[in-house]
Length: 107
Image (cartoon, helix red, strand yellow):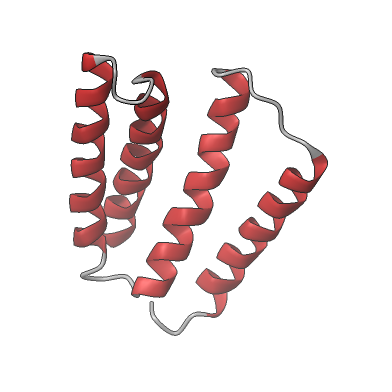
């Protein structure tokens, strides 16, 4: 169940971040409310995942996957550009998350 809860937390965080962008500094009501709801779901699901997943592993996974998904959405939906240093940095994040998950004794 821990990884399902972590997946829900990641998806909610990515949605919340994109709603935050759409809220234009919390000046638009619906995206602002959606941001708050998404983050509440995110933190609740993340807290549940911590019952069974090591904090360091969960946080690395949450952060790493969240960054990748948010960047993909930023490129596709928000039409933002990504440069080579950003791509290299994200590859390093993915490698770090994989190493953390594979070699962690916290499972």
